[in-house]
Every structure is written in C-alpha cells, then in structure tokens.
Image (cartoon, rainbow, N blue to C red):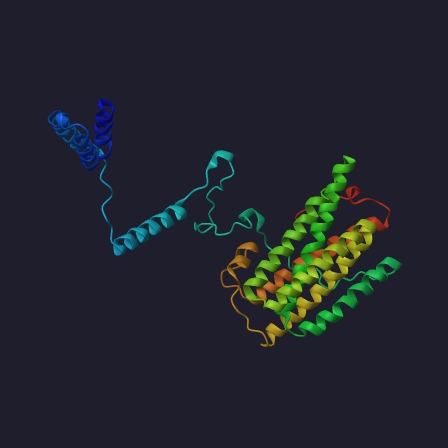
Length: 342
C-alpha cells in the first residue's frame, strides 16, 4: 500500500495535479484511514509541482519578437544592399601574392582591362610592306597556296561584302595556329631538353595578338546565333586539322598560315575601301582598341582596321620566315625568333 501511495505521489510530481488527484482518489478507495496524511502529501506535492513548473517557465529564454512581413522585406533589402557593397569593395586575399597592383593610365585614370596590361600595348608599325607575296615554287608551297584559295570560296559565298562579320570569323581561325604551334614546340622543348630559340613565346604572342583582334571586332560587330554556331564548327574542325598538319609537316603548316595572313590583308584592304566609300559607317574606335594600340582618343573604325591589317602583315612575314627555315632543313630553334614583332 505504501508503495502504491509513494508511486502516486511521484507521478504527481512529474505529471502535475491531475495525475496526483487520480492517484489520491484511488488511495481513498483502498484505505480511508490514510486520507488525511495522503491529502497533506498531495498538497505538498501540488505546491512543489507548481513551484517546479514556475521555475521551469521562468528559466526559458524568451523567443524573438514577432516581425511583420513588411519588416522582414525591409531587413532583407538592407542586408542585400550591404552585402553588395561588401562584394564590390572586397579585395582578394594577398596571401598567395597574386593580387594585382593598382595600375594607372598616363592620364592618371585607373587601368580598366584585365586581359592585357599597359606594357602589353604598343604602337603598330604601319610602314610595313602590305604587297609582299611568297611565290609558290615547291610542291608543298603550291599545295598550301591552293588549299587557302579553296578555303576562301565558301567564306566569300557566306559573308560576301559583310566585312565586319568576315573579320570576326577570320580572327577566330587566325588565333588557332600560333597556339597550336607554340604548344607543340613547348612539348618538344620539354621532351628533348632543348631551348626553343624563343619561338614558343613568339607563336603564343601571335595567338594572343589575334585574340585581341577578335575582342576588338566583337565590340564592333555583334555576332548572331548562327554565326556563333559557325564559329564553333569551324574552330573545332580547323584546330584538329591544323594540329595534325603541324605534327606531320611544320613547314607546310607555317606556309599555310603565311598565305592565310595574305588573304587577311586583302580582306581588311577591302574593308577599308568600303569605309572610305561610305558603305560602312566610320564609327568611333572601341576603348579596348585605343588602349591596346595606343591610338588617339578620337580614333575611328578606319584607324582600327588599319592597325589590324598591319599586324596581319607582320604575322605573314613571321610564318613565311618559319616555313623558309624548315625548307632549309633547319629547326626553328636554330633561327632567332622575332619576339615582339607584331
């Protein structure tokens, strides 16, 4: 009996008054003589349970105050603005020592480009002979020349007199040979533990210069979706084809590029004629072109096409020279590379 009463009191402590009262009523049915003592214990238990509940409730930390939907939106907006400010002002950690130093133009304004630095810019040599042509004599020369002439046919049909789009397409192709040649010469240098004679750097400089031509043309001509698709197709086919040709015969590969550059000179000459005749608007030069070629601030499209054409003439000379070195039975590393020759 005492165990039963004690168990009822313990349940009262845990479950509260209702359970204690249920236990008390059951105890009364069993032994009425214990009613008085059990009632006192019940009162004590109730008081203790109430005190316990009161302490537990008072020890709970109050929850956050209720926020209306409008207030939440305002808070989110403020946090978004603040995080945007932090992102804009964020500086990449210099732990690795790779953070770019602050660079200024000559007029004191910040240098806006990450794709090239002021020391990469230059003034184009416009005195170069644009009419030079390598007359094909050997079989490989004739094969290279005919190949380029055949490749020109679909280009003429597709673009006709749209020289802006034509130039954009040409540059996506023209930037490939220098990268392929430089990459293969780099791997050859590593395999044979030999210097490249500076040709790795010279060919990669050519590829980078052609890429900057493309970045300039994209500012002037916005390619349509089917032209972008054409670029993907042509680049995929040309890259792999040229890669195989360079592995089999570097002299043939360089001769092909030399003739491609001759065609580029012709295309840009026709481009300039249309600008001079008023068929194409002579718009202001893009900012990237002004900084890259160190052109005057008031330069126009005509000035940009003129310096690009001069670059193509330099690339023509470099590749015909490289082909001549191979035709003489020598390796490129035996002839000093024309570094910085744009």
